[in-house]
Image (cartoon, rainbow, N blue to C red; front, top):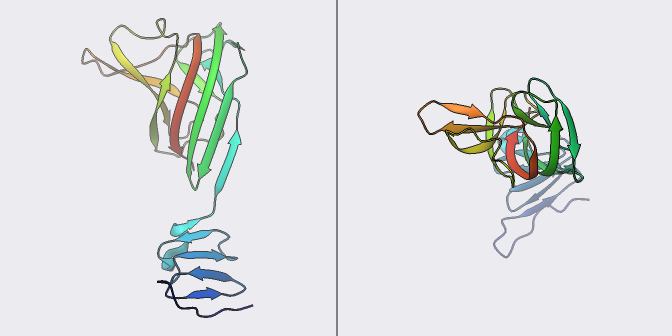
Length: 183
């Protein structure tokens, strides 16, 4: 089936064939070769093809960086993600108790690994942090770094001493949101 040209209502044309559907001079292309939506200029379809959209769930958990320890969840952890192209946005909520852990707090179980040489900063909120804050840190952010599939929490020191990574401790109702690039 082929519809080669239609004029009217501000549209330059509409082309329909067995391989491509072009609307308004090719601004939107569905192609069997690309199996995605080509956005913008079609001369570089690889760079402009949206060929990956995914939604799903995952199970976040907590552990220490040096010694993982044992984790107990007071309620079922919640983890949701949306992946568009190479970027994934995650949201998680968990309430946990750690025992026998040491080192920094890691949240594991992420659905994708962060791209090499990349780093992303997100936000988080927690109802019980008094045991986790170092005295000279004003605020922590959720952070994921290249080639990692876990989140840690990094805070800038207010005494000019650089930064601190949050120690592994128990948390109540921790919520984390972060967007990061995948491989």
